[in-house]
Length: 131
Image 1 (cartoon, rainbow, N blue to C red):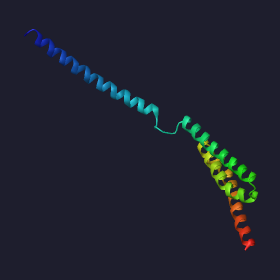
Image 2 (image 1 turned 45 degrees about the vertical axis):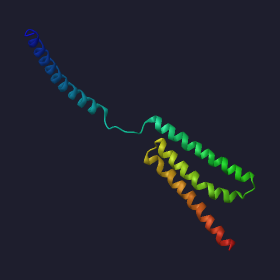
Image 3 (image 1 turned 60 degrees about the vertical axis):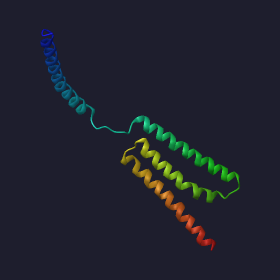
Image 4 (image 1 turned 45 degrees about the horizontal axis):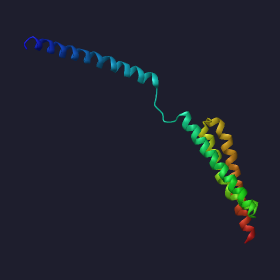
């Protein structure tokens, strides 16, 4: 039994030495990987595609609703006023999700805001004439 004891001690020492070597090398490897990867983001291309499809499906649903309401005999102007704001919000959200830059989105946002202001303003003007 006395002959086994030095071999166990030597094995423990060699394991401790190997652990120390691995700890040092893994820390440098982790640091290297962290530097090369850059910041971690949750925004992936798959997520952007999925969100774009969801937004487009919702936009199509709004168009289908508008067509249904027109077929039911409602006035087209009132349907346009009710449905235009969701469509404008859908369009703006879609442009943001797809990933256009601020320079590309700014003119479109201005145009969408102008259309929304016109529709809301003409809705108020029509109600003033009725009373």
